[in-house]
Length: 185
Image (cartoon, rainbow, N blue to C red; front, side):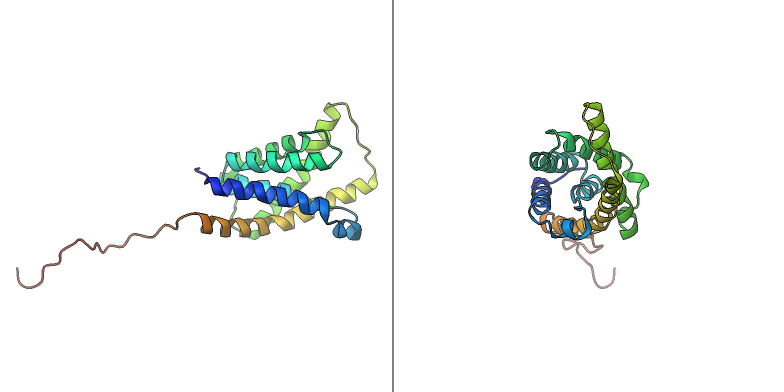
């Protein structure tokens, strides 16, 4: 899978914008009591459409920006996003990536798995974040919100791919250098 450099740049920029929007605009957080995480859905798109280089670009860029603005240890989010993206990438042949419902399910699964992997990693590091009943609500909002955002990411990056890559033109049976003989032979 050959990934175009501009596609990698676009995915890294999208990861930066995701973290910026999550950190800057918190109206939805106040309304529903939790913030939707856009990065796991973007990692799913990177894994299914562009491969490991795109997964690493989104995970490293988005994860480091996210960790620099949160209370997470530096690099923790990178680790969980890489695990999710690598799992999706290596199972991509079994997945239906061109339909909205499987995209929603994959985005929901990634959005559910990323915070659980981060919690497990924090527990291994000896730090135990507080887990109470509102944490379950936040996890459900992360899961459903990430699932709803993933088909949108697929639509955006299909357009980006059309803009950045040459379109394959189907070959015709007509060749312009072919000579047609007319008349009797």
